[in-house]
Length: 68
Image (cartoon, rainbow, N blue to C red; front, side, top):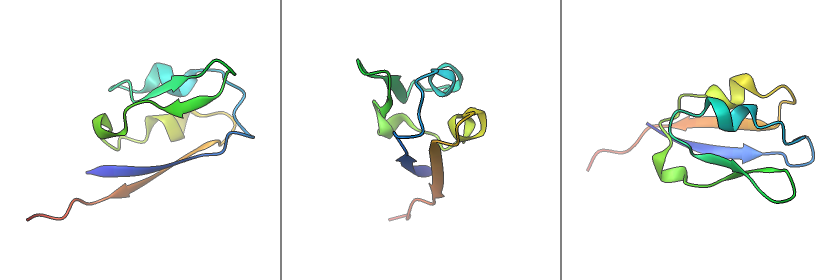
């Protein structure tokens, strides 16, 4: 399972909760205090970042991988 992210930076206050709860360290906080996707390939689409964000700034859409 993979995920497509949408981060609404205008809503993000840089609290870091999403970064702390991500089990694969996919997210990070930049120098301006905003969350960004550091390594999307590691994402397991657990949705913890979206669930824990108090500002509704992260949206995770789960995408099934196509078998070859």
